[in-house]
Image (cartoon, rainbow, N blue to C red; front, side):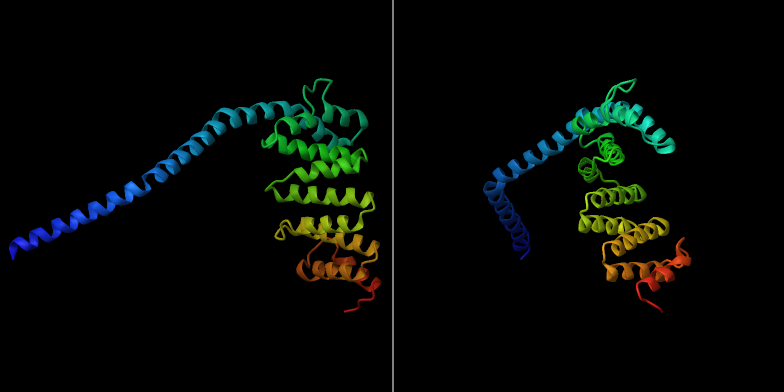
Length: 235
């Protein structure tokens, strides 16, 4: 009896080893291939990130800095044709304009900011199609900036008389971060006013009511009832 108790575990272990060996014989090649692929992918990503992306981030950040400084100045003091041209194309102490940075450094933080700056500049230059093009290439987790970008796309579409597209982006601006009461109510108010102007009273009423009901402390609280009354809503 004692001998059988010893033999059974040994036999069981041998069966497990045989099954394991059979598994490896059957699947070793795909396992090795998949493992090698993962190593190559991970290794390639690390090389790309550390040797390509990181230097590009540093270089693009250095290149965009003068353009950003001039752009920030225009935001404070006003846009003008000459400064816009310098920001977009470079020159006059700006080594590289944002158009080239957006083109050559896509995927970097600076390249993303270059799209926003280019879109804003084209909007102020009344080149609305290009404004839309660059602003649509921009995205950020900074919700107030993203709200502004959507709002500017709406402005560009409205100037092109593309009313449905304009209203869509005004609404998108209001949906970026509904916890930001100021940006949300301002965007909703703009969307409501625009909907009213293009003869979409139902949508305008819906948005006016949302401002009134969801954001009672909004900066337009004193006027919302007046706008609703103008559209025939008394409640």
